Length: 73
Image (cartoon, rainbow, N blue to C red; front, top):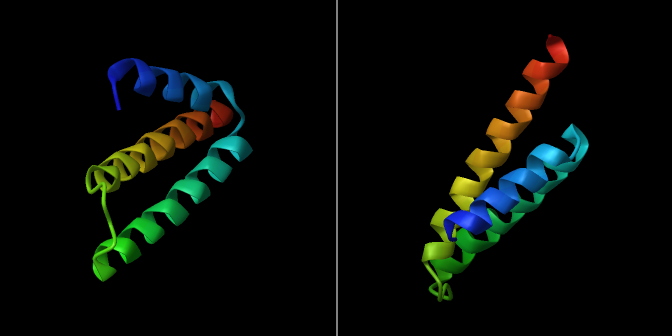
């Protein structure tokens, strides 16, 4: 992903509510599982996608944590 795409994605995540971020996190985890399964069976063509998804999961978790911290204050 390019920096502009990442910033847009983060803006979308930060703009939504916690439920939307959680739903996005669930979708990313499902995609990660499918990618790992494809990799194990030798069917994975775009190996860089594993890294992208892993990083997007981390970004979503960070945004979710930010929202939880703001809710407490």
